Amino acid sequence: MRDLAPVTDYCRDEPAHDKRLAQAKRTRKRHVKRWAGLWRTIILSSLGKTLYPYSQYIRTLNLGDLGELLTDRDFGVRTCRDFFHGELAQFAVDKYVKVSIRILNALESINRIGEAITKQTPLLEELTGRVHERELSRWVPRLPRLTHLKLYNASAVAGDRNFIRLHCPSFEGRSFWRWNETNSDQGLATFLNELYPQSLKSFESSNKIGPRSFQALSCHGEMLTELKLDMLSPDIAPKVSLLKCCTNLVSLSLGDRWWVLCDRGRATSHHKEHNHAFLETVAWLKECKKLQTLAFTNFSGAIALTAPILLENSIHLTSLVYKGLGLLSSKKLLRALANQTSLQSLSLETTVKGSPRRAEILVTSLSKLVNLKDLRVEEVFSIFTDLQIMRLARSLPKLEVWSTSGDALTDDIWSAVASLRSLRRLRFDAVTLFTPDGILNFVEKLGPGNKGLVLNVGSSEFSFSRKKQKSIQEKFTEKVGGEFEFFCIGYTSSSSENESD
Image (cartoon, rainbow, N blue to C red; front, side, top):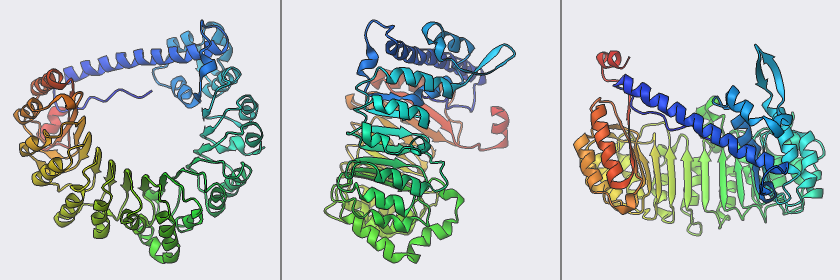
C-alpha cells in the first residue's frame, strides 16, 4: 500500500490546497479500510470462516505487507478494532495499554496470523516478511512447494540452516535484507553451502558479505540467473571476480547503499589500486552472454566495468541502470552506450554537472537507441537544451516513459515531443519556461496512444495559477484522460516566499 501522490502546487491558493489535502486524507483512509478488509478475508479463509477456501490457492504470502498495514498511520483505533473483532481477536497482541488505548504488538500479531495461514496454504511458493527463526522452523515443513524466501532478517535461518534442504526440494531463491550475526559473510556462506548444489536460481542480499559468500554462490553458478548485492564496499568490490563461475546470469545488480558515507575520492579510484582484480571481473562479465539487465549503484569501479560490457557485441542488454560518480568523466562510456541498441530501459543518474560537450556526446549515443521505451536521465545534465530534447524526441519513437533534466526549456520542444505516440509518462525535473498556452497546444496534438499520459512540469516561476492549471487538467482529461502536475523548484524572490507562507 502506497501513499497517494502528493499535491504538487504549493505556490499559491492555500485554501484550495487545504481542501485537496483533506480530500486526499479521506480517500487514503478509505483505501486503508479496503486494504484491511482484504487481509481480514485471507485470515478468515485460513480459519475456514469464508464461503470459499481462498487460502488454499495462495502462492505468494507477503507478511511484510501485513506489517505495513498494522503500522500504518491510518490504521487507527476504530480500524484496528474492526480488524481484530470476532474470530480474529485471538491474533491481537498488545504491547501495553495507554490511557485506555491499546498499543498493538504488530510483530507478535503477524507471527500468530502467519501460523494460522501457513497451515492452510499447501500451494505456497514464496514467503516474505519479518519472520523469526522459531516461526520459520515450524512453517517450512508445511510448505513443500516453497521456492523463494525473502527475509528482512537472515537470523531466521541462523540456527538449523539445513531444514530448507530437507523440506523444500524445489527451493531456488533467497533474499536477505539484514544479517545480525557478527560474521555475516561466514554465516551466509554456510547457509548457501548447505543447499543442494546448483539449486539456487536467484539471490538478493543487503548484507555486508565477502569472498566466502562469493565462493558459495559460485557453487550455484550453473543455475543462478538473478543476482543482486547492494552492500559491496570499495574494499570488497575487487573480490567480486570470485563469482566468475556465475556465467548464466540474466540480471545482475551491484552496489553499495552506504557509499555516501565513505571516502568518495578513494571509492572512485579504488579500481586502479586493484587493476588485476577488476580485469578479472571484466573478463567474467564478458562471459555472461545471457545478461539482459545490468545495474550499478554507487559501485566502486563501475566505470571500469561498464564500458567494456557495453562494447561486447555478444551481450545484448535490455535494461541498464547507472547511478554514481564518474559517469561524466568517461567519454568512452558515454560513446559505448550507442553499441547497446537492444536497450529498452535506461536510467542514468549522477550529482556532478556535465559540460556541453559531454552532453552532446550523450545525446548522440542516446539517439541511436531506437528501441528505448523507458528513459530516465536525472541529475545528470542540467544543461540539456531545447535542441537536444527535440533531437531525442525525434530519434526515440518508442518512448513510453521519459524523465529528464534540462535548463530553461521552452515551448519550442512541444512539437517534437508530441510526435511520441506511445508516451505515457513525461517528467521535466528541471527549470522550465513553459507557458500554459504551449502546454495546451501540446495536449491538442496527442493521439490515442497517449491515453492516460501524466505530465510533470517543474518551474521556478509562478506562471501557473490555479485557474490555468485547472484549464490544463481539464484539457488533459478531455483529450487523453491524463493528468497534469505542476511543481515549483525554489523561489525567485523573498516576496514570493512571503506569499507562499
